[in-house]
Image (cartoon, rainbow, N blue to C red; front, top):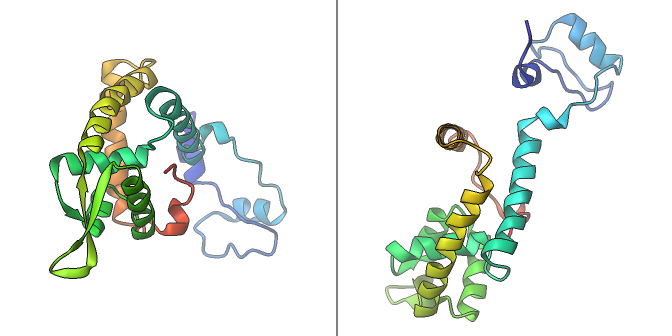
Length: 196
């Protein structure tokens, strides 16, 4: 019986070096002794989800820059997209809707305001808060980019059938929903690698 690559990953003990403790890890003695003897084989990255997700993100980011915009990032587009339906949001709420941490959202807001895509105004009832609104230029930019974004995604998914796309989207949403509750909120450090 052939074991799937994911099942193999779930059953592979990992140790950084021979002195790493592996007691109580739930693996049998034979697997543990192989790790302690330094016999753990290298992973086949082509069959690991994290590696494939990273590669897809790289492809998506490159396609975005070429096909959608080299000056407005996908994170900035997400902010504009949130503001299309929610005019005049406080910066914290906007960051949550766009799935950006506070520091990244603050940096994006400053940059986007300088470019005229959004306006930032102090909340009259709480001067510590910023209220973010989309400008006419931001609306026009969003309109132009939305169609290009759809076209880019259509090209990206062109190798899949409609049923495969539906299945993939369903599984990705399920993973995001399932992992979101068990993962810490994004931090400035964890989002520094995201395109802005």
